[in-house]
Image (cartoon, one colour):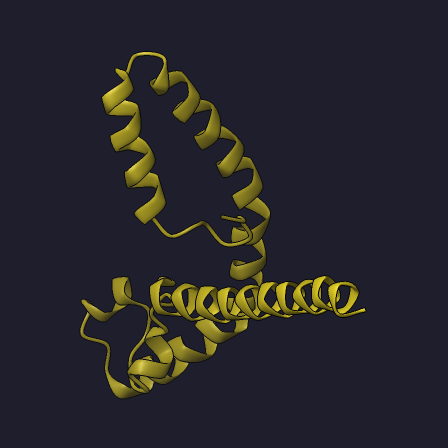
Length: 129
């Protein structure tokens, strides 16, 4: 009877250990992913309440112009975001074809370096990695 219980208890111990190790791996992975995710793009309007988009900052706009410019930028922000997200799938497709073509001329070592470079670059919006 003891010999039957011992394998069952070992099985349960193995299962519990496996589940615990898996759970710790998930927790650690989430922490690492959070620590290494790229910073969000700068929000120029939130950072500088009196500012406008960087290209327009150089024109020395007065306070009235800045207020009007901010309204214009905010009015078009959603459309700009939508256009960027619509363009990214096509841009990604072109980039992947370019990468594949470039790989044909790289040595194995250069391909490994290229892989390392790609791993450090943040993904484009909507792009899984």
